[in-house]
Image 1 (cartoon, rainbow, N blue to C red):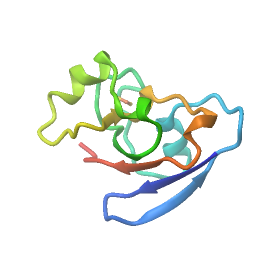
Image 2: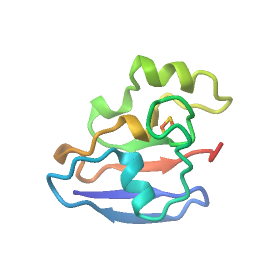
Image 3: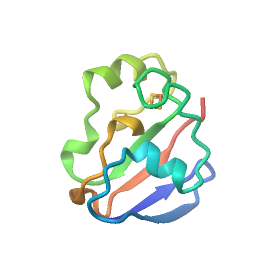
Image 4: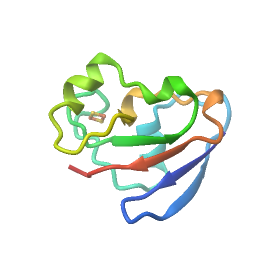
Length: 104
Ligand code: FES
């Protein structure tokens, strides 16, 4: 599974993920060395794992109600904003592009 991550400076970096892995996007980003605090440990409470979906299958553009509760409190959430801790890595994510947001 190959993803592209656009960092906060606009740089694009590939991230390769082995198939069959059972992790969230937040965990993959942390393991790949990205500066994501994930203060709440993946409980959809802190928004420090905020990402924006740039390219990918339709269903990934829509945040869940739990995510929207948090995202709606941010001054700069976008329609395709998601919490990376709430995105399970799956094979249909191959080729997706995510942008890191904030760092708040
Ligand atoms: Fe806290 Fe995702 S890690 S909301």
